[in-house]
Amino acid sequence: MQEDVFCKIVKGQIPAYKIWEDENYLAFLDVNPKSQGHSLVIPKAHYRWVFEVPDFGEYFEKVKVVEQKLQKAFAPDFVEIWVLGIDVSHAHVHLIPHYQKAPAKKELEQLAKEIKEAPIL
Image (tube, rainbow, N blue to C red):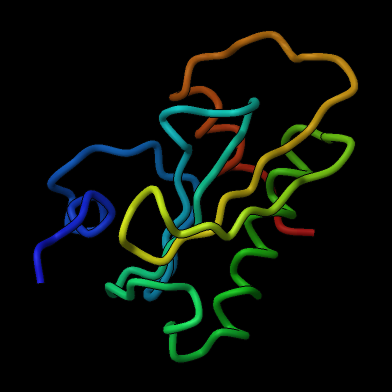
């Protein structure tokens, strides 16, 4: 199997704006964000599709943790979830905050810091 960009992020071979992680999962800011705080949640082990992740329920519990951090950090009107799996061949979930008014643009490093430091509800 050829490594994809997310496998390289997990191994530290490619930099990412990490916002949360545990032993099995990692969340980081999307480098082509649809909105402020647009994040990806991935399993650290390689699985091609979300439905191949062995503990699917645990994975989505971790997605919920990241969504709560986004809510606490930015108070968006809602957070959209995308499970497409076609842009990178590694299981991933997009979390895209939506706002009534467009927030001021911030640097990715500052956004990552705000989310990382936000407490879990």
